[in-house]
Amino acid sequence: MTVDILREVLGWCAVINIGLLLWWFLFFAFAHDLVYRMHSRWFKIPVETFNTIHYAGIAFYKIAILVFNIIPYFVLRIVG
Image 1 (cartoon, one colour):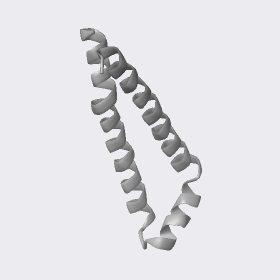
Image 2 (tube, helix red, strand yellow; image 1 turned 60 degrees about the vertical axis):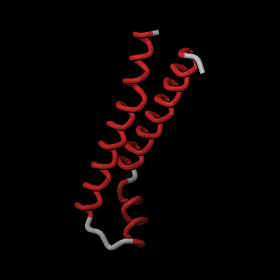
Image 3 (cartoon, one colour; image 1 turned 120 degrees about the vertical axis):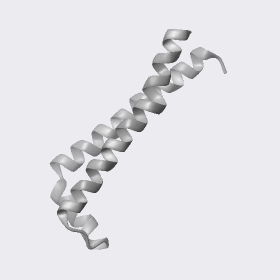
Image 4 (cartoon, one colour; image 1 turned 90 degrees about the vertical axis):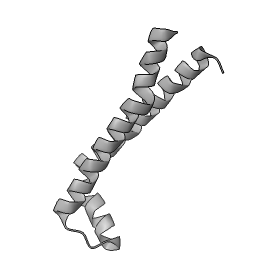
């Protein structure tokens, strides 16, 4: 695998992951009640805890995208 192919793969992975992150945020922001009702059928969880879990999940996913996709992509852009 060449540096160019790896750079292209990391770039597309970042785009796809950012799209998923955006979808998660928009769905959570605009369909919060629907998502909470769906999950509260399966799990007895207060809305504050539900919000905290999603907020932490979105933050973790954002950091993971940055660390595993975007930073290596820019490193390969600088080096290669």
